[in-house]
Amino acid sequence: MKIVTKLTVVATLATFMFAGINMTWGNSYSDAADGSGLTAGHEFGVWMDVNDSMSFGWETGEPIKVGFAGPGGMTVRLGFDPGAAVGAARTSLGMSNTWWTSTGDGWGTNLSTAVDWGVAGTGSGDFTLTMNLGFGF
Image 1: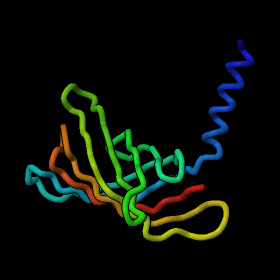
Image 2 (image 1 turned 180 degrees about the vertical axis):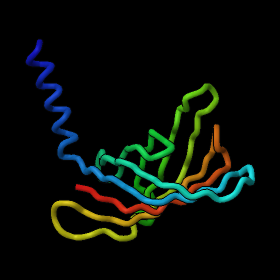
Image 3 (image 1 turned 135 degrees about the vertical axis):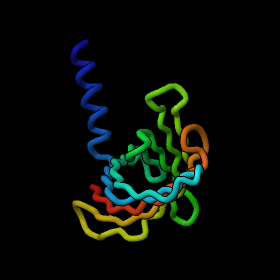
Image 4 (image 1 turned 180 degrees about the horizontal axis):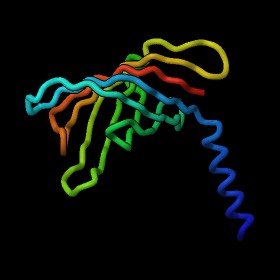
């Protein structure tokens, strides 16, 4: 039984080992629907490719993000934050576009922009504009 468990763990880790991983870092600008004004902040995230048209990851503010290939080379983003307290969950819908990607092997660099809208829960009606610098392999 131990050998089966070890083989399963190694096989699972190998699938992630060869997946594309992208770490993003940038600035975010958000406007609250309650009229409290525009705020700026820092953004950090980690994305892993599932296949050519889907990825999942984590970004500051929403620990669960899923991205799907969209029209015109853009990515449709769905986000969910279950929240620490009851009733504090947040769901978002957005689009992102990677408008510059480096060429070559090894570490890849990219610049992207994303817009996310709060559609349900805490922050419903808010929008966030994010500009990221990404490093991936």
